[in-house]
Length: 148
Image (cartoon, rainbow, N blue to C red; front, side):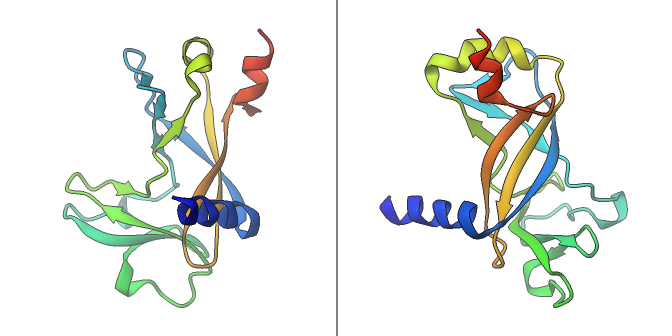
């Protein structure tokens, strides 16, 4: 557990920060337990998305946004995130949910309906990514809660 916490800290401290839009808020079930569930829009064109098979993959962010089987990631890819493609042709990075402390869950649920969400993530040179913050209408979620 301590090793995992240290790894996440290192990812946030040493990685490059990028912001990606998120979508797919389900108004009936925005929060699952105390996790906000969403889809990340990596900006991948239809011709470069996941195949419809379960494979270990990486999504190249620089220079071209494209998904590659992990063993085919080109050396020219200077920023990437490791993950998997699932049988529904979706790239799963492990960043698809954001923990919300229980005391803020109901309040945040109301505030994020019909809002624009973005995820701030940090990506290290090995393709490991960690969530830094959740933005709603370009504002950190903690700011929205503080307005109450």
